[in-house]
Image (cartoon, rainbow, N blue to C red; front, side):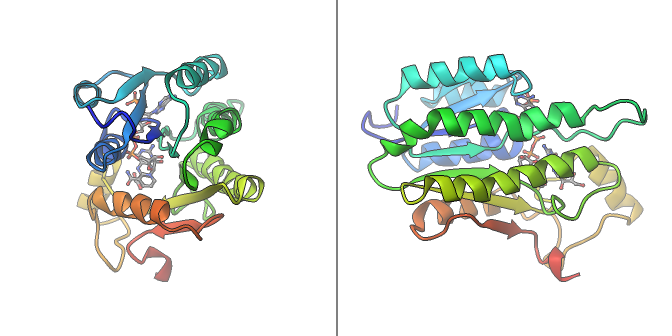
Amino acid sequence: MPPAHSESILITGASRRLGLYNAKKCLEAGFHVIATYRHRTKGIDELEQAGALVLPVNMDSPEEVAGLIAQIEQSTSSLRAIIHNASGWLSDSENPEDSEPLDTLFRVHMQAPWLINRSLYPLLQKCRGTADIIHMTDYNALRGSIEHAAYAATKAGLESLTRSFAKMYAPKVKVNAIAPYLIIMNEGDHVMAEEGTLPVPPMGLEPGEDVIWQTIDYVMKNSYVTGTTLSVDGGMSLK
Ligand SMILES: NC(=O)C1=CN([C@@H]2O[C@H](COP(=O)(O)OP(=O)(O)OC[C@H]3O[C@@H](n4cnc5c(N)ncnc54)[C@H](OP(=O)(O)O)[C@@H]3O)[C@@H](O)[C@H]2O)C=CC1
Ligand SMILES: Nc1nc2c(c(=O)[nH]1)N=C([C@H](O)[C@@H](O)CO)CN2
């Protein structure tokens, strides 16, 4: 178990890949971790065994988000950081009359962070030093996407909330976004890579999860960075 005095970090969507990796890095750094998941995985078991408080929540449900907030308020007296990592990689619907996945991704990428940041701000204020909110957005948030327009739009909304919360919460709480290009491939990327249709950054593909942890660590250690979106894109913006 981490030291009782260690500060708490809330990270959402910690069941796999980047969320799981960065939750483990927070534990290694000596923080007490509160990790949320939707579907329990071996990774969540590992986090719990390492001393993290693991809490189930579907961020698509405002009622479940309210329940999560209440559980966090009962489990810690302060928060050092909130990392909004939970996200749905959902393709747009073929049906022009269907407003999914826009509705779902609005709730997951914007409404849930909105509710959590505003409700847990008092816990961030009780942090010994400066606290942090970090939003995981995306290289394509402001560029748009042909097949993931709802995903890109709601990530762009989250980037806008980054700047609004940064204005509201300074100087006690810094608020920043991290906008990666492709850090870890998923099914569709492997197909595109094999077909040669996946755009490759000047620094190459798949840098590994640690480049995101390095950015989180930098943001949390820098007392003067707020309201920014930090690109972690291998130079894609140069192309
Ligand atoms: N991987 C990459 O290359 C890139 C990632 N990003 C961003 O970085 C972050 C991490 O990416 P990555 O690890 O690939 O993401 P994944 O899609 O692999 O995992 C997302 C996490 O969010 C959780 N989640 C999804 N929907 C919900 C929901 N409705 N309620 C609660 N939790 C939910 C998932 O839980 P469950 O497993 O239970 O569904 C999972 O733990 C995301 O915000 C992503 O948008 C941005 C650009 C590139
Ligand atoms: N929630 C997720 N968001 C994103 C993912 C992912 O797997 N889950 N993957 C990417 C990659 O950049 C890539 O799949 C885009 O082609 C973007 N966001």
